[in-house]
Amino acid sequence: MSNSFKFPSRFLVFIYSIFAFISTATAQENVEALFVNNAVYNQNLEEKVLQAIKTQGGKTITELQTAARTLKNEEGFTWKGIKANSTQIKKADQVFNERKSAVFIMGKLNKSNADAEPTADLYATAFGISDDGVCVTNYHVLSELIYLTKTNDSIAAKTNLGTYFIQSIDGEVFVLDKLLAFSSSNDLAVFKVKTAGKPLPFIPLGQVLKVGEPVYIISHPDHNYYYLSKGIVNKNSLMLNPRKPDIRQYRINVDADYAVGSSGGPILSETGDLAGIVSSTQSIPWQSEALNKQQMVLKNAISVHALYQLLK
Image 1 (cartoon, rainbow, N blue to C red):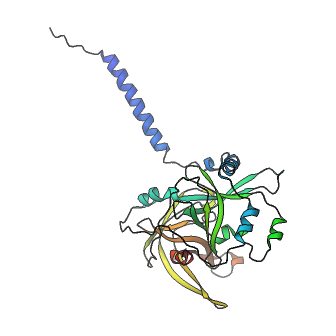
Image 2: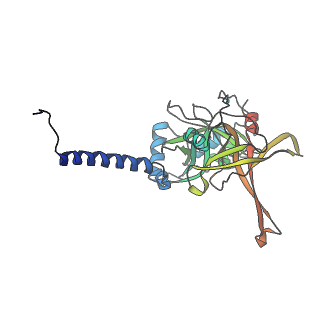
Image 3: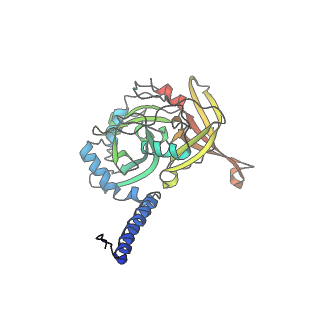
């Protein structure tokens, strides 16, 4: 007679059922992680920004405007970032997964005075270019901070206790510390956020792409956060200002989709490196805009070459 012990079949069925339940639950969690809940990024946003201001020592819009007075349009600054050296071609999902954490949601905290209730808005896109908190967006996104003709006294007369910030894909908030450089002609603004010593994910600067080469864009069109689109480079354009011939505009057109909220988003190459920056769209009507006979929409962006010109 054998002395081996056998589990009752009912017990084995019970054990298998538990493992099946755990496996199903884990699989369900993995599937759920594939879906983005846009509402999460707006949840308790004012509280998160106020806490970030408190812990990071954030500056008000008035303070940022005053500090920006020392900057000159089109004047570059010394930058010790990283240029791309990879030649490995990546699939769309690889580009997205490797670069999404370096793309941020640009936001503004509105607070006109000490008694006003703060409100926060998420309205554009930005991205990191070095791990010490240096980021890039459009000039038109941060144009409120740039008063080239106003005096410090006139700025201080309209005290604004709000501020600007970025929010990461994980919901972490970093407040804007200072504007570093800007180009109105190329619609670029370079700024720094306070990271409290935490390295910030960033996108290496790549090369100028040729017409026909593939591109990817990660941005936030109309509050659809972390939206990936794919296309090609349609054209590289050099535009000169007759009144200021020394100022050159380096533009590219792409057919990857973007819309309002995408301003300042990175345009990426197949290697996942920066090739350009989203700027604007231009509708081309068949007859007149009043008749709404739209034929084509140009996606006007900025070449990475313009950013190189600003980063000395």
